[in-house]
Image (cartoon, rainbow over all chains, first blue to last red):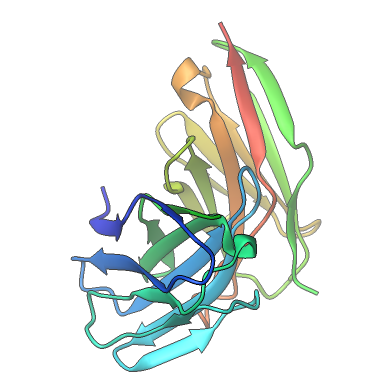
Length: 110
Length: 112
Protein backbone atom coordinates (compact mmCIF):
# COMPACT_ATOMS: atom_id res chain seq x y z
CA UNK A 1 0.00 0.00 0.00
CA UNK A 2 1.42 3.35 -1.04
CA UNK A 3 1.72 6.12 1.55
CA UNK A 4 0.49 9.06 -0.45
CA UNK A 5 -2.16 11.41 0.83
CA UNK A 6 -4.36 14.08 -0.65
CA UNK A 7 -6.52 16.68 1.04
CA UNK A 8 -9.23 17.65 0.79
CA UNK A 9 -10.97 14.62 -0.72
CA UNK A 10 -13.90 16.72 -1.88
CA UNK A 11 -14.14 20.47 -2.39
CA UNK A 12 -17.00 22.64 -3.61
CA UNK A 13 -15.98 26.24 -4.12
CA UNK A 14 -17.26 29.37 -5.83
CA UNK A 15 -15.84 30.94 -8.97
CA UNK A 16 -12.89 33.25 -8.41
CA UNK A 17 -11.67 31.64 -5.20
CA UNK A 18 -8.05 30.65 -4.69
CA UNK A 19 -7.53 27.02 -3.71
CA UNK A 20 -4.63 24.75 -2.86
CA UNK A 21 -4.81 20.99 -3.18
CA UNK A 22 -2.41 19.20 -0.88
CA UNK A 23 -0.37 16.10 -1.69
CA UNK A 24 2.12 14.40 0.59
CA UNK A 25 4.07 11.16 0.40
CA UNK A 26 6.19 9.46 3.02
CA UNK A 27 8.13 7.14 0.72
CA UNK A 28 10.96 9.57 -0.01
CA UNK A 29 10.24 9.51 -3.73
CA UNK A 30 11.94 12.22 -5.77
CA UNK A 31 9.43 12.16 -8.62
CA UNK A 32 5.90 13.44 -8.13
CA UNK A 33 3.04 14.10 -10.53
CA UNK A 34 -0.36 15.78 -10.80
CA UNK A 35 -3.02 14.43 -13.13
CA UNK A 36 -6.45 15.68 -14.08
CA UNK A 37 -9.16 13.11 -14.76
CA UNK A 38 -12.77 13.48 -15.79
CA UNK A 39 -15.08 10.64 -14.64
CA UNK A 40 -14.24 7.35 -16.36
CA UNK A 41 -11.77 9.02 -18.68
CA UNK A 42 -8.00 8.74 -19.06
CA UNK A 43 -5.55 10.59 -16.85
CA UNK A 44 -3.87 13.71 -18.22
CA UNK A 45 -0.55 14.87 -16.78
CA UNK A 46 -0.65 18.55 -15.80
CA UNK A 47 2.50 18.95 -13.66
CA UNK A 48 5.48 16.93 -12.54
CA UNK A 49 8.58 17.30 -10.43
CA UNK A 50 11.85 15.38 -10.37
CA UNK A 51 12.87 16.69 -6.98
CA UNK A 52 13.05 19.70 -4.69
CA UNK A 53 12.87 23.01 -6.58
CA UNK A 54 12.11 21.18 -9.83
CA UNK A 55 8.71 21.63 -11.49
CA UNK A 56 7.59 21.11 -15.08
CA UNK A 57 4.35 21.51 -16.97
CA UNK A 58 2.75 18.34 -18.21
CA UNK A 59 1.13 17.39 -21.47
CA UNK A 60 -2.23 18.99 -20.72
CA UNK A 61 -2.29 22.75 -20.40
CA UNK A 62 -3.46 23.85 -16.98
CA UNK A 63 -3.97 27.18 -15.28
CA UNK A 64 -2.76 25.71 -12.02
CA UNK A 65 0.72 26.07 -10.51
CA UNK A 66 2.78 23.78 -8.29
CA UNK A 67 5.70 24.05 -5.93
CA UNK A 68 8.20 21.55 -4.53
CA UNK A 69 9.96 22.99 -1.51
CA UNK A 70 10.16 19.69 0.35
CA UNK A 71 10.57 16.18 -1.04
CA UNK A 72 7.41 14.90 0.59
CA UNK A 73 5.10 17.77 -0.34
CA UNK A 74 3.78 18.78 -3.79
CA UNK A 75 0.84 21.21 -3.53
CA UNK A 76 -1.20 22.40 -6.50
CA UNK A 77 -2.73 25.91 -6.52
CA UNK A 78 -5.47 27.50 -8.57
CA UNK A 79 -5.34 31.29 -8.20
CA UNK A 80 -8.88 31.86 -9.48
CA UNK A 81 -11.13 28.84 -9.77
CA UNK A 82 -13.55 28.55 -12.69
CA UNK A 83 -16.29 26.03 -13.51
CA UNK A 84 -14.03 24.59 -16.23
CA UNK A 85 -11.67 23.48 -13.44
CA UNK A 86 -14.29 21.06 -12.15
CA UNK A 87 -12.61 17.65 -12.28
CA UNK A 88 -10.77 15.05 -10.24
CA UNK A 89 -7.14 15.79 -9.43
CA UNK A 90 -4.82 12.87 -8.73
CA UNK A 91 -1.36 13.08 -7.22
CA UNK A 92 1.27 10.38 -7.68
CA UNK A 93 4.86 9.67 -6.76
CA UNK A 94 7.21 7.18 -8.30
CA UNK A 95 10.26 5.04 -7.89
CA UNK A 96 11.70 2.82 -10.62
CA UNK A 97 8.96 3.86 -13.03
CA UNK A 98 6.04 2.57 -10.97
CA UNK A 99 3.72 5.39 -9.95
CA UNK A 100 1.70 5.26 -6.75
CA UNK A 101 -1.48 7.31 -6.60
CA UNK A 102 -3.27 9.13 -3.86
CA UNK A 103 -7.06 8.90 -3.45
CA UNK A 104 -7.68 12.09 -5.42
CA UNK A 105 -9.46 15.39 -4.80
CA UNK A 106 -12.80 15.87 -6.47
CA UNK A 107 -13.16 19.59 -7.17
CA UNK A 108 -16.42 21.27 -8.08
CA UNK A 109 -16.42 24.96 -8.96
CA UNK A 110 -19.83 26.58 -8.94
CA UNK B 1 2.16 11.02 -31.77
CA UNK B 2 2.29 8.92 -28.67
CA UNK B 3 -0.94 7.32 -27.67
CA UNK B 4 -2.14 4.37 -25.72
CA UNK B 5 -5.59 3.05 -26.31
CA UNK B 6 -7.88 0.27 -25.22
CA UNK B 7 -10.00 -1.59 -27.69
CA UNK B 8 -13.25 -1.76 -25.74
CA UNK B 9 -14.75 0.85 -23.42
CA UNK B 10 -16.78 -1.79 -21.56
CA UNK B 11 -16.33 -5.51 -20.95
CA UNK B 12 -18.99 -7.59 -19.27
CA UNK B 13 -18.11 -11.07 -17.99
CA UNK B 14 -19.72 -13.75 -15.88
CA UNK B 15 -18.33 -14.31 -12.41
CA UNK B 16 -15.79 -17.12 -12.54
CA UNK B 17 -14.92 -16.60 -16.21
CA UNK B 18 -11.58 -15.28 -17.40
CA UNK B 19 -11.33 -11.66 -18.55
CA UNK B 20 -9.04 -10.26 -21.21
CA UNK B 21 -8.57 -6.51 -21.50
CA UNK B 22 -6.62 -5.23 -24.47
CA UNK B 23 -4.51 -2.17 -25.12
CA UNK B 24 -2.67 -0.88 -28.19
CA UNK B 25 0.23 1.52 -28.00
CA UNK B 26 1.97 3.49 -30.72
CA UNK B 27 5.35 4.53 -29.33
CA UNK B 28 7.89 1.87 -30.22
CA UNK B 29 10.38 3.55 -27.85
CA UNK B 30 8.25 2.71 -24.83
CA UNK B 31 10.02 0.18 -22.66
CA UNK B 32 7.83 -0.05 -19.59
CA UNK B 33 4.12 -0.78 -19.29
CA UNK B 34 1.75 -0.82 -16.36
CA UNK B 35 -1.83 -1.89 -15.73
CA UNK B 36 -3.86 0.02 -13.17
CA UNK B 37 -7.25 -0.68 -11.61
CA UNK B 38 -9.43 2.22 -10.55
CA UNK B 39 -12.50 1.76 -8.42
CA UNK B 40 -15.14 4.42 -8.15
CA UNK B 41 -14.00 7.36 -6.03
CA UNK B 42 -10.45 6.09 -5.64
CA UNK B 43 -7.09 6.66 -7.22
CA UNK B 44 -5.59 4.13 -9.65
CA UNK B 45 -4.12 1.08 -7.98
CA UNK B 46 -1.09 -0.72 -9.43
CA UNK B 47 -1.86 -4.23 -10.69
CA UNK B 48 1.13 -5.45 -12.65
CA UNK B 49 3.92 -4.14 -14.83
CA UNK B 50 6.18 -5.46 -17.57
CA UNK B 51 9.35 -4.26 -19.23
CA UNK B 52 9.95 -4.48 -22.94
CA UNK B 53 12.53 -7.24 -22.59
CA UNK B 54 9.74 -9.59 -21.48
CA UNK B 55 6.72 -11.06 -23.28
CA UNK B 56 4.75 -12.26 -20.31
CA UNK B 57 4.55 -11.68 -16.60
CA UNK B 58 2.28 -13.34 -14.07
CA UNK B 59 0.92 -12.16 -10.79
CA UNK B 60 -1.76 -13.44 -8.52
CA UNK B 61 -4.71 -14.22 -10.84
CA UNK B 62 -3.40 -11.71 -13.38
CA UNK B 63 -1.14 -12.06 -16.39
CA UNK B 64 0.18 -9.33 -18.65
CA UNK B 65 1.20 -10.15 -22.22
CA UNK B 66 3.30 -7.85 -24.37
CA UNK B 67 3.53 -8.19 -28.14
CA UNK B 68 6.07 -5.66 -29.34
CA UNK B 69 5.67 -6.64 -32.97
CA UNK B 70 2.12 -5.32 -33.12
CA UNK B 71 2.46 -2.96 -30.14
CA UNK B 72 -0.20 -4.73 -28.14
CA UNK B 73 -0.62 -5.22 -24.42
CA UNK B 74 -3.22 -7.32 -22.68
CA UNK B 75 -4.31 -8.03 -19.12
CA UNK B 76 -5.78 -11.40 -18.31
CA UNK B 77 -7.73 -11.90 -15.10
CA UNK B 78 -8.40 -15.49 -14.10
CA UNK B 79 -11.65 -16.50 -12.37
CA UNK B 80 -13.05 -12.99 -12.39
CA UNK B 81 -14.71 -11.95 -9.15
CA UNK B 82 -17.21 -9.18 -8.33
CA UNK B 83 -14.39 -7.29 -6.60
CA UNK B 84 -12.63 -7.06 -9.96
CA UNK B 85 -15.32 -4.68 -11.22
CA UNK B 86 -13.54 -1.40 -11.94
CA UNK B 87 -12.03 0.68 -14.72
CA UNK B 88 -8.72 -0.68 -16.01
CA UNK B 89 -6.07 1.53 -17.57
CA UNK B 90 -2.89 0.63 -19.37
CA UNK B 91 0.01 3.08 -19.36
CA UNK B 92 3.33 3.26 -21.15
CA UNK B 93 6.61 4.97 -20.38
CA UNK B 94 9.80 5.55 -22.34
CA UNK B 95 11.81 5.02 -19.19
CA UNK B 96 13.82 8.20 -19.58
CA UNK B 97 11.40 10.77 -18.23
CA UNK B 98 9.40 8.52 -15.92
CA UNK B 99 6.26 10.05 -17.36
CA UNK B 100 3.38 7.70 -18.02
CA UNK B 101 0.95 8.03 -20.90
CA UNK B 102 -2.44 6.58 -20.07
CA UNK B 103 -4.91 5.03 -22.45
CA UNK B 104 -8.66 5.28 -22.24
CA UNK B 105 -9.99 2.92 -19.64
CA UNK B 106 -12.00 -0.25 -20.02
CA UNK B 107 -14.84 -0.71 -17.56
CA UNK B 108 -15.03 -4.32 -16.40
CA UNK B 109 -18.46 -5.40 -15.23
CA UNK B 110 -18.74 -8.75 -13.47
CA UNK B 111 -22.17 -10.37 -13.56
CA UNK B 112 -23.07 -12.66 -10.66
